[in-house]
Length: 349
Image 1 (cartoon, rainbow, N blue to C red):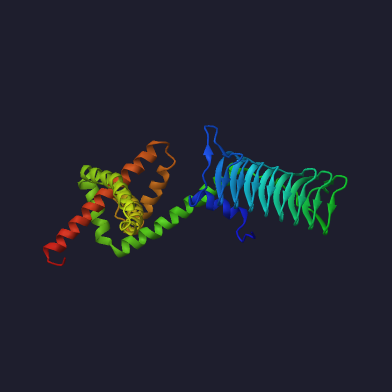
Image 2: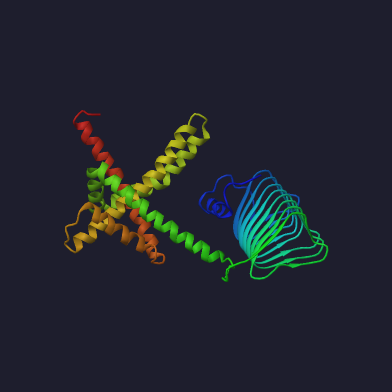
């Protein structure tokens, strides 16, 4: 089917969302395989060192790996990112690939669009649509048939074998001199940096909103972290562990499913807000240590910087952040109880 989203968006969806993921069999060598004879009835998502499609996928394939091998049948699009991608089977729709090396040999039902250092089209390959490539070098072996156009950008003309038929037009342009080899690790590293910057920015905005809407709640929660650390830690730990079991029990019952869904959203949001409360506590403690009188916004910024620097301290930084969130979880629950008792004492609830 025709896709609006490009290959990179498919990769981002693969990394960030685990929805409707087809069953696959990972091994200790980080190999994900659709076995010969196995049929996947929907779209297939996978990320590993090696991905092998030996069976049949009745949908699109989204793959991110060092090596992607398709020996079977894909009755949809193939969207892949990797160091080496090899297609020996049938792809009913489009191929969209970014890789260091690409080898295609088989029948392709629609268009092929690739960016690579080395593209090889094997013997007796049939491409029903267009072949569009940006590559360091291109080799098209004998008896290949391209029913559409051949459009390519490269440093040198493609090496085209005997009996190669291009039924449409051929367009060739010299590509700018640059290294176009795609490095998956570098891409994922840049993606991780982008995610961290985005997370920092969104956390700051939500922290500002929390301070603006509930300043007293934030102040009391930060205070409870300091004055009731062990109680906060215990309550936060119990909340973190017990709540998922309660949600699972609700999911088992038909009438409890809506409550379980709402509870899950509340659970995730509550943990996220606890992270912001811990950040505020860190900022307030550091400002108190240096006897600096800072505004709430500056305290938030200071806490954010320290919190995100913790991520670069191996193991200990992650442990500190984890227990800090547990503290803030417990402290915020204590604060909510105090607010409730105060309202109840005034007969407001």
